[in-house]
Image (cartoon, rainbow, N blue to C red; front, top):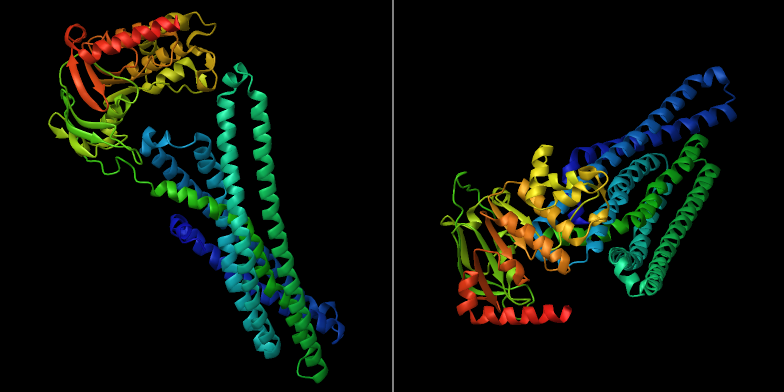
Length: 578
């Protein structure tokens, strides 16, 4: 039994209890059905009873059969509902927790593997929850009920059942350990295959450009073959387990039949008693054999649960949020005092003793070489990560004391690579505010300099985009994201290197859109390209995680030693690219 899954099963405890009670009723129906069948056969063939004398017994047998079938149906329906409820609860919490972990965690994971865990892994719990857990109740209750009934008729047959029943779990444990190792290997290969396949699909255009797509087909074939081999190894052990359990149950039934025959010959048993015992013996072993089959079916879910619960146990950087909210007209003046941050496993700090004031109006650009700490600074402000030392305050209130959901509503965030979803352009812009009127959508698009190219499309704002914004250039996707941010009407605008991955033409278009969007607004821009930073009201220069220079673009051009070196290297790279 997986203890953590049992704790998670508390979400459907009432249904699980109902499943157990229905199993008890099914066990009693099994005993009643066997006794009635034995009595009918003995009366008809030995007592010479006719149909008229047997009618009450036949009617009772039919009624017991219907009741048993109804109890089995209700038990499985309750088990399926229990499984759906628990899986829905786990999946909802898992998705919410992955979102709470933020991009700082997600960048260290493979997207395909996370998707496989959240979808296939959670679905893999269904055999464990809907079949294995209820079957454990059946395997515990029905054999006990049958054993009591057999002992009441013949203690020798009951003793045989009691001894052989202890051997079945022993064989299940031995074979189960072998199956668990192979199932872990199979699940590991599935995670690798899912992650690699998604990476290949996303990068297929690039692979085709460099003529490497055929090589990836071969790699996927090799990984798929390994997964197939691991699956067949798991099935081999499962079939071996089923064969061993069937063989032991068949031999035990034969031994009981021999014992009954001696009892009949010795006159210690009546025919009806012996026949009833013989009918009950297969029913005694059936739940135990079913438990072995369901164990192998549910083992994949139990293995997947290890990864699921490892994700749920990963501490969220902003798990301990406050409850305070600032007034609607608050200036939202942000200060960083002595802030330090180090990524887990990193050799050096990403930010070291950062002091920064973002208290004045207008836009503030953060520049520096790659790895200087620009994206880390933005993640701290969004509370995707927490500083190891120092403090971030908003209007003199520590950021950690603010309500996390409220704080993120105050920020419109545009990442370096925005995410566009399959749907129309209007729907993608409305992600900023779902209830926005069409006029407001167009107004935001005009401010982000997206209205012109949208209007040139055949269906304008009703143009359907493919996965990841397929159909638009990088600059057009960035301007859609800027329009979305504007539509949200958040008082603070945070842009994380909005033009870093664009070509020269798209960069010029997106930079002009950024300048238009940030004019007169509280905006914080993590800028990789100085063409974007030069349009900001103030510039902060980061180097090796430290703030080294702060000033207006004109001041830094005159007095900023580090900033001027960045300008020289920037234009040197630009000239080389041209």
